[in-house]
Length: 285
Image (tube, rainbow, N blue to C red):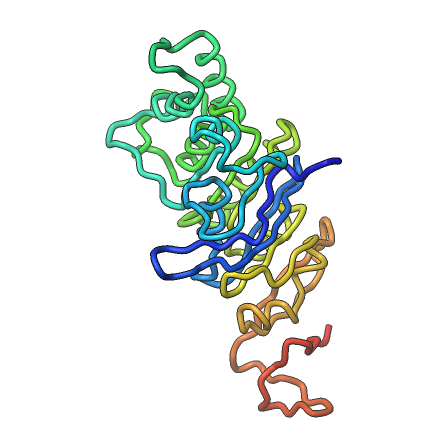
């Protein structure tokens, strides 16, 4: 029987008495790019923490290749799952090469010197993310896109086959967002990495993902291909957003065109122009 590479069964997660993720089931296919979308506070980042055991379940379990994640040591998990938080912090003065070298820690024993294999893994990670020329540059001197590529390079140096990326495009302008997501897609296609990421831009999520998981109030409201999930009905149901969803011209993937709050809503049977838009309402093309 083929197991998903990473899955959650009846997973509940929270902090002290506050439950954030509630009885959630999720299966992640090996070699896929899955993006989690949803409003602020719905549990997206908390779910990533639970999938990597940075946060222990209050109930349910996470499975890695069909085995309970609790049966793995933290080092063994780090060898399989690399996590890039939303706002990673590095010591002042750290160079790109020094940062990426830290990705080798889960692969080393306390008595082991930095080996030729470690050097090769760091060099490969720098090359894969196109930051080899910046190896001796201090992180603070990089642009936002370059800095994010350096952090992804560190995650790659772990040689983990699963990458969990929490809002990897945060604080980046559109050009650098596309640059980072093109890199993520290339790592998936050329190196076979399984990627799970949280994004806020739904059009970019649809463009760069194999599957979309939409969350609201700690639950999964919808999951499937971008075309199955990114609809005007779902955007209204989850975000309260009026929008057209149209196919973009290059690949035909869903593209979201938000409508302002003053945009008139066409009247119809049981729906006046002043009515709120119900979840089942389809905006006209």
